Every structure is written in C-alpha cells, then in structure tokens.
Image 1 (spheres, rainbow, N blue to C red):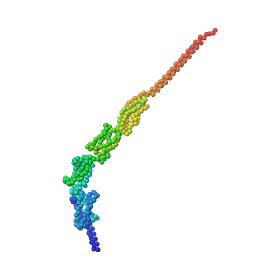
Image 2: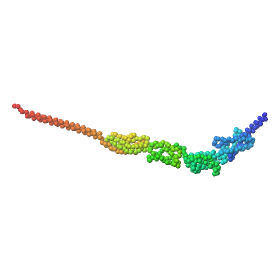
Image 3: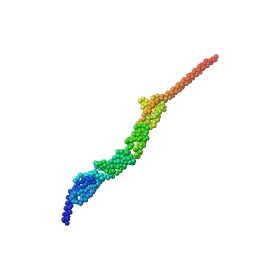
Image 4: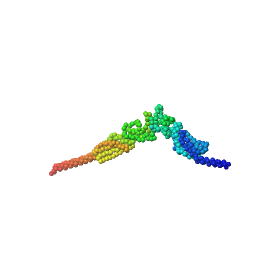
Amino acid sequence: MAGLCNIKILLLWVGIIVVADCSYTITAIKFGFRINIINAAHGNYTISVKEVNQIETTNKTFQNKNQNQTASFEFPNLKPCTTYDHKLTFNGKETCENNSNKTVTTEEMTEFLQPNETNQTRPTKLPAEIGNLPLKCTNLTIEYICSDSTNITKNLSQLEPFTDYNCTGQIKENNVIIINTTAVRVKVDCEKSGEKGLFTSLYVPDRTTAHENKMHTQDSCNITGLKPYTNYTCEVQPTYKGQDVRQKTEKKVTTKPGVPENISSLSATLEAHNVITLTCKHKEFNGPHGKYTAILYSGVTRLTKHNNNCEFKFKDLSYLTTYEVEVFANNGILSSNKFRKSIHTLYNDKAVIGFMVFLIILMFVALLIVIYILKCRKSQDVNEDIKLNSTAIYANVPQLH
C-alpha cells in the first residue's frame, strides 16, 4: 500500500510539473486557427476565443491522449478576416502560457462567407449606403445591384426617393463575384430627424394677393400675401413626381402684427360755434389692441384724445380760430398713416346774444324814459292851461256898484 501511495504522489508531482510547463502557440489557417501545445500532458484542453471588443465567447475542447508530446488541434469555421482574443486552459483549471500574439486574425475564407451574416443596414438618406462587409480583407469588396417594380436595375447612387427596391450585394474577390448577399428591401423616404420642425416660422413681408397653394423644392418656403395678425391652418404635403408621399403635416399659426389700415374718411363738424366733432371710417387694426388717436393743433395749442371708437369731441375752443386735426389708428405696436383736416370755429354767438339782450334792455329803458318825459311834459302843459283859464275868468267878473 505504501508503494502505491508513493506512485500516486509521484504522478501528482509529475502532473504539477507538466501543468506548469503548459504553453502553446496559435496560428491562422484557412479555416480558422491551429493550436500547437508544447509538452502536452494527458488530459482535456479547452480553447476559448471571442471577437475583439465583443462579449460572446466560443469554446472548444480537445482531448490529448499522449504525454509530454507536442499536440496540435484546429479550431475551424470562424469568420474570415476577423481578429480574436484567445485563451487555452488545461482540465478547466490551469491556464496555459501563450507563446504567440495575444490576438490572432483569421485568413480570408471565401468558402465560409455567410450571406445572411453580412451587415446590411437599410439607408435613410440619398445617396443610399447599405453598408460594407464587416470584414477588413483587402481583396474583398461588395457592390449592390437594385431593381424596382419594373425590374430596372440601378446601383446605389442612382436610387430615387419614395421608391421600393430590392437590393442584392455582390461580394467580390479581386473583382470576381464569389457570392451574393441576401436581398434587402430599400425605400428611402427622405425623412429628417427634425421632421416635427416642418413649420419653424411664418414670414409675412407684405400684403399682396394671398397664395392658397405653393409648390417648393427647397427646405424652406416663404408664403407671402397673408393678412397680418390672422389665424391660419398651414399644411405641407410632400409630393414626388406628382404623387403624394408620406402624410401631410398640419400646424396652426398666427401671423405677426402688421401696420393698421389707413383711415378711409374723416368728418369734422361744428356741433357748436366752438365745439368740434370728429368721426372716421376704418376697417382693420392688424394687431392685438385697437385704438384711435385724435390730435388737435392751433399754434402752440395741442390737444390729444384716445378712444376705442373713432368718435371725438373737442369743447370750449377758441372762437374764430382755424384748427388742424389728425386722426390715426394704432394696434399697440404699429400705427397707420395720419388723416389730416382743417376746420374753422365760428364767432362767439353767446356774447352776441348777450349784447343784443343788453341793447334790447337798454332800448326798453330808454323808451320808458322817453314815455315818462312825454307824460311829464303833457301833464305840465295841462296844468298851465288850467291856470290860464282860471285867470281869465277871474278878470271878467262884473263889478257891483
């Protein structure tokens, strides 16, 4: 029994020495890798490989039945022209020393190209780009041939928007077709990342005749002829070759305030000899806040009034004076042109009437005085006549003897 134990200890000691000396080299072959293990011990070797910068790892286990000999194993069916990280372990525990490069790149293996593994990204813009092979092999290229519903073939640079195509990539080695990719459906709608911004602004430079429809082929379109400060519903319908493509986009917008319309007519009348009344006709303010302003001038005199309606009254003005009046509309931001007019106040009729009343009273008083004087004179004349008659009677009385 003791001898048997010594044999087991010796074998274990030998195994440790073998594991410590485990080393390998790895080289690329046409079908993948070849692993050469130096002084390979009897047991299982596992080679683990993964693409650089990838997570997924592929493992393959080999059994070596010999002892202290160089063992060679192959790891086939890997991607061509692809760089891999690698690691070799013995019996799932000990890691063998790598005597070659930390990474290894497979050779070109056109026999193992898988068409469905080609990275084919559908294009979203023109000129179209579907993508290249995920291979960095200098002798391999890919060229796409596309056909539409009428079977007219085009290359990627000739594709048109809003058209369905089936595109197949021709993988070539030294310009010779070796295999085709799986077909990919391509339709470029020319959508932009900022599609929600189809309406970014609405520019209203003037008030010419409105355009109900306007065709445009650029990224922006100025719609002129709209009314200022007016609510509009704007729609954009993309078309291509006369056909509607994609759904129309709608947005409600309000145009910016504009200059109010000018006063169309102004009436200036005298309500009294020194009272001026103004009325005017006007339509659109073209802005948020509508008010009218009237200004009255006479020399250095300046009177200003504001009103929501175009009706004004200026009282207690000077008589027999010429006044200039101006009326304009304002929307809180901009003002219309001023409508100007002249008007002349009349004489002071109240003073004239007072003077005439005074004259009438004066004449009435004078008349009363005249009447009184006449009456007084008549009364005096009567008294004188009575006195004279009395004297005459007294003188003719007969004397008695």
